[in-house]
Amino acid sequence: MNKGIDLINRGKNILDLTEKLINIQSVSNTEGVKKIGNFLHDRIEEWSYYQKHPDHLLKLPLRNDPMNRFNLAALVKGDNDSKNTVVYISHMDTVDIGEYRDLKNLATQPYKLMEKLKSRNIDSDIKEELNSGEWLFGRGSADMKSGVAIELELLKEFSENTEDLEGNILVIITVNEEADSLGMLNIAKPLVELAKKENLKYIGGINTDYTTDEIGNNPANRYVYRGTLGKIVPALYVVGKGSHVGDVYGGFDVNLLMSELTSRIDNNMELADKLNNRITDPPVSLKQGDLKEEYNGQLPYEGFAYYNFLNFNRGPAEILDVFREEVDDSIRSTLDWINGNFRVYKSYHTDQDLELNLDIKCYTYQELLDIVKDKFIEEKVEAEIENVLSQVDEEGIKDLRIHSLEIIKRMWELSELEGPAAIIFLVPPFYPPQNPEIDDEKFEKFNNIAQETIKNHETNGYNIIVKDFFPFLSDASYAAFQGTQEDEDTLKENMPYWGKGWKIDIDAVRELNLPVVDVGVHGKGAHKYLERVHIPYTMKVLPELIKKITEKSLQKY
Image (tube, rainbow, N blue to C red; front, side, top):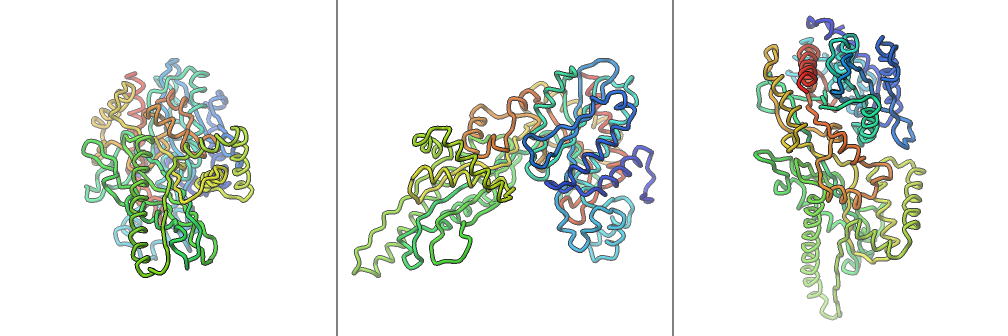
């Protein structure tokens, strides 16, 4: 037990459970996720409330999941038969522990890790925090096992006092948040079905995900966020024209086009999304490369690249249009570059009759698919796609971006088109932005209650500041869909893997339409080996704040 700070019983319980959860290594996409899920389920199952209401504790399996993973849902209903329900959101998985290097065996042993770190040469400020007794280190301490512990401690309190609960509390704990968010993608439909079965009305959600200091601001500041940042990943498959390196102008090197595109997109603030006085980080390359697997003297004739676009309110349709404009401009610049240099080359070879007739076509995935479907019946096309996915599964390829690429490559083969060409499409994941200022009474009411409660709450000397848009990617993005029909069509038509293992159940998400406020734990170094959570704020101040927001929301609806 940490002796550095005097904690009330609630805080001690949260700290103890946080440590127990850290002890269970639950890296996303590993068996450890099921282990921690079963631990949580068995622990909650022992509470007296669930002895009386076992049907209120649910394992919600992921659709068609080869690992048989599941989300957890735990419902506590108040005695007054109110429909109003506040949803707590958290995730049980973590990122990998590779960054711990020689300390990997201690990544899930907080106090042993902290003792070992005391002898390491680390930053003096971090060393001071380490020795203060106010911070708990370890994988998942901040992101977000302490958040899970807070939600469960509050749920237990509510379950023991249902006569005073003026509504209902539903805790959902998801898997795969740190990878492709498959857990949250599977949650909307079961929640809608649960609402019908239990006569629930979801009025708002509280996420307890990691928050941290903002550079240059008062270290006593703590942050609560309304709304979530969005993300979309446009991709490019380039087909070149094979040729020997001794006949450069007889072919086309795909790296030339991809490099031009990356130089236009990467770090380009003109392409960042703007809303009022806010701006996102610029787009950035996540992958770029040709697909040659070994050395030879042939020009690279296939390439693959994809890019990270963050957004406040631009939807998939607009971003794909922006991406296509950049690809079209890159094609023009690349052709200008090649033609200009070819003229120089030709001037040195006047004895040869040299001509260059190079063009690069651009297609969206939907346009490519339409060409293929003009040649083959739809059943044949779908069968080909299923064959591709079966093959990548047999090869043990888990990267959904590669699954998407292989579909594109097969469709290109079936099209019988000739390169050079560029095909643009979308790859998972896609995170819909949640704009807290949307014209929606439900969002406005819940956000205002949260903000008012925070303003009037005793904060023990911390400055709690409410801001718009959680600055990191969050599962809470999938609690509502504010996009247009055109956005929905763009996703379905231009994401090859949509419905093949990754998709948003948009109808269910629209019905759920849950405003979410991140009232998160305070920590530092998430996803790094010095990840840590601040105990005094997280274990003492935060739980009471969340409880007050919950109670006020249930009272005022």
